[in-house]
Image (cartoon, rainbow, N blue to C red; front, top):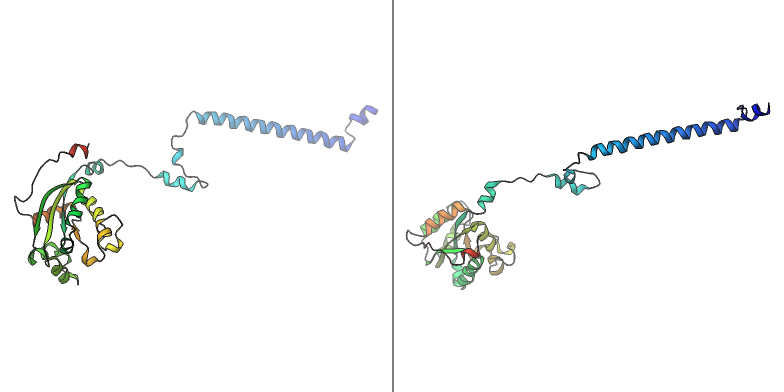
Length: 232
């Protein structure tokens, strides 16, 4: 009877303790099984590691979204970097009158571009109008023409890889007050109406303007001795 009293389950406290122990063992077994499952799953996945995790987007890493942009290789863009272009550069009457011709030429020479044409020239009105024909409908067109024919200009033809885009950067914004320091207009000019220098805005216009301002035989084709030190 005493044995039944002790082990017969009559005590509520003892019965509760047994139930709790059974529940804990069940929970432990379930956790162990889950842990083994995750370990097995991890080993399975590790056999095929992702090569693109650096380009995945995680909410906690918003900057990773920018890494998801694909890098596209375009051979024609690389080829364009090696294309030799021509550009027309003109020192306007205010630049000539202020004695800035040498300063402007030196900036293009120091950059490594090749000078193929150079002359001091008094521009006639018909040539000025043809050069600026795209601006003919603008209200400032008459003043622009009067300005260009008001004194001699220096006409230049330059040649080099990416010369048109590079020349535009060397010259600076049309409005000198918006041009960066270090550019020709940023350093030497103040007003748009007296912005010292002109440069072609595209390779096509570079060829057109050179043909407009230079006659046949006025351009000189030559090979600078420093060319191996400028291009691979």
